[in-house]
Each structure stands twice: as structure tokens, then as C-alpha cells.
Image 1 (cartoon, rainbow, N blue to C red):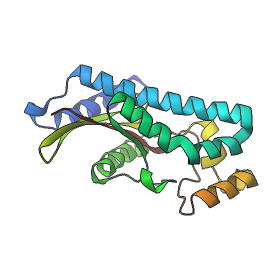
Image 2 (tube, rainbow, N blue to C red; image 1 turned 180 degrees about the horizontal axis):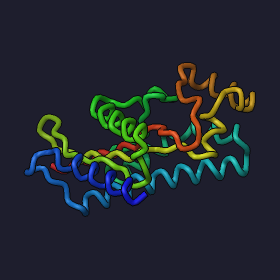
Image 3 (cartoon, one colour; image 1 turned 180 degrees about the vertical axis):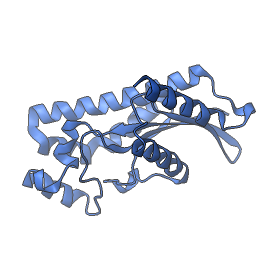
Length: 193
């Protein structure tokens, strides 16, 4: 386990150092972006768990389809960042990764396949877009057991949940996960220049 943590830490440092030296990322910047990503996921998970406990799984799916994007946008505005959840197996078409995010997700997938992905895994890079520079940070999303109510095998889902997902997401690809699988990533982008 210690060996795995060391490899992940070294890979994270390599990823961070791959950008130009003039574009070095400070530890404070990483800590801030990490906090934003982790706090966002905790808040979203808390809302979904609360909905499952008070209104059941169908209510949680309704909240996800009706308000998750609004909550995400509002959280980003409040924190002064662009934030979203991205996945190759997206449910909402707005959550498909762009080219930069695809590259990072492929790295996360490789780490997952090699049993190197863990709670400490993250990626940060300074990216130029036109005349602006952004600090871009991604943190993997790992499937938790409660996620399987909506993202597990269709044969294990409640009929009402399947129906609601099919109705709201006709092109849904976010199925057949198992606990511990890589779901995607939280992507946080902040203007720095």
C-alpha cells in the first residue's frame, strides 16, 4: 500500500511538472483546487443521499436530472471556477469530456487498470487558451455502493428508476459499474491570468 501511494504521488508530481517551469503550480493552488473539488462532491453526494433517505431512489434520480447541473453551475459561480463532472460513459450529454479532459481521463483509466488509482490521485496543469491562462484540476470519481442504484446493472435497478433514466437520458451510457470502478472526474478550471 505504501508503495502504491508513493507511485501515485510521484506520478502526480510528474504530471504537474510536465508543464513549463514558468507555469509552475504552487502547493497552495493545488490545495485550493483540491478543496473545491472535494467539497463540491461532498455537497452533491450529501444532497443525493438525503433525497434517497427521505424520498427514495426515484426522488434522487429526479434531483440528479432536474437540479444537478444547476447546483454545479451555482457552485462554480460561488467559487469563481468552471466546474463539471466528466465521463466517457456520460449520462448527461453536457458531461462528456473535452479534448483536455479526455487526455487526463485516459491517464486515470490507465492508473485504474494498473491498480494505481486511489483517493490521493489528482492532476493539475496550467493551460493557455488564447490570451488567458487557466489552472485546470481533475480528481477521479470512484463509484461508491450507493451509486449502483442508478449506475449499476440494469437488471438490478428498480423499474421506476430505469424508466425515469430512459425518459430523461435516452443516450445514457452510465451503466454497468461496480463499486470501486472509475466513473469519471471532477473538472475544475480557474482563470489565473
